[in-house]
Image (cartoon, rainbow, N blue to C red; front, side, top):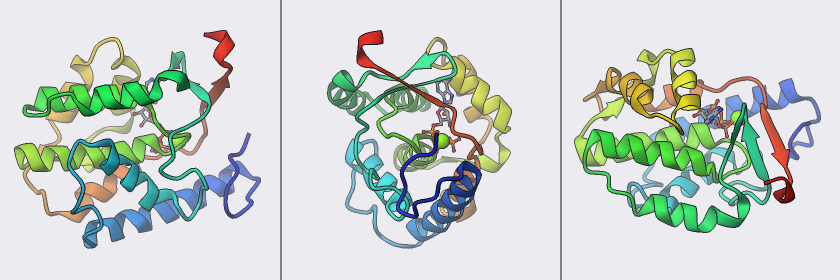
Length: 201
Ligand SMILES: Nc1ncnc2c1ncn2[C@@H]1O[C@H](COP(=O)(O)OP(=O)(O)OP(=O)(O)O)[C@@H](O)[C@H]1O
Ligand SMILES: [Mg+2]
């Protein structure tokens, strides 16, 4: 299944390649301009502004909260009917320590507000919280992809692994654009989502 896109691409590999190219180019621009300056770190408004910026050229649904229930692996993300309250709950979570910030990131991943592109948008969102609150960011180039993904799969049950993976990658190079853009590089070239109906819950 290939997502409807503004280029009317029907081949999933082709779409993945274009998506990667465009979102990377956009991430570079996002770093260089002042687009996010008026947003509050940790707010959903900031996350959806990031999503819009990265994906608006590709998807009609950029910045919009999803309207279908989705799962990845064995994990079902927040059901559509609770999305709004889940988003508000996560926004209100504290973010003054490293542990609190990662806990907030894990919860936002469980919400998975968008139909696609949650990982890339939320990794940038995470770094902007870390930068504001701790004057540090995650250097995604020093995070092993497999370790990250395994820890994220585990994170709804136990967040100790993702805390460990991310902590060893903290850096004070907060103005190094590569550090942010590498988080976009993390993309996997497959669309691993299952859609399920509300009645199945
Ligand atoms: N089984 C799982 N349970 C919980 N979270 C998961 C699971 N599998 C992946 N994730 C998280 O979801 C993200 C992928 O979400 P999505 O596909 O919406 O984002 P993306 O930007 O397209 O992809 P990517 O993060 O691979 O660049 C991963 O980066 C990871 O953080
Ligand atoms: Mg994806």
